Amino acid sequence: MKQLKRARQERSWNQQEAAARLGVTQAYLSMLERGRRSPSRSLTRKLMRVYELPPTVLPAQEVKQNVCADFLARELGLLGYPGFAHLRRGGRKMNPAEFLLTALAQPSLEARVAEGLPWVVLRYPDMPVDWLVREARANNLQNRLGFVVTLAKEAAQKQDLQPLEQKLADSKLAKEDSFAELNDSERHWLKEHSSREARAWNLLSDLRPDSLRYAA
Figure 1 (cartoon, rainbow, N blue to C red):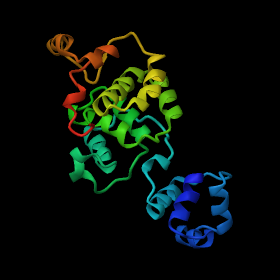
Figure 2: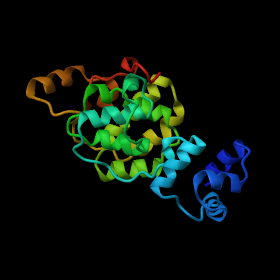
Figure 3: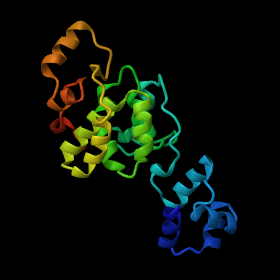
């Protein structure tokens, strides 16, 4: 992993010094830096602490189903979202890509969490895109994720998000969807008030780029 070697060199440590701080042998660290070994999850977390690496180095494992709203809020806070700064203590960070799809996989996603998802896209541009797109398609989440990416792109005028947006658009689903389970009156209201960006992804949502507090 070139990222490990670069982080070590930025601290002016040789491999022996870095290995001692990490609790591994110099030979093993050398294999990690050359990509010949993959660190365990526990070692990855130690690498994050010692090298101050972002959570995108964590393995993206699975899309979790039926998690509670408080769990999502806490994880979003741990990732650094300003809206949940008071929730940054306790728990362990997830890979941002894993968090995004876990949030989007919930049958009812709280509005306060949904509003933070475009921020995740912008804050962590080095997410594992291939895993993100593959798992989004496998879980039929490409429309929800595409909408989040579009919101991020439009709010921050980040045209470099267009390739990811297009990959998701290539497998866009025709079925109407939403971030929550809606009753008839809520569905009717959202059909009238959904944003242009939501309609483009066959979603019922009034989220708009200019309504995101922290994504711009």
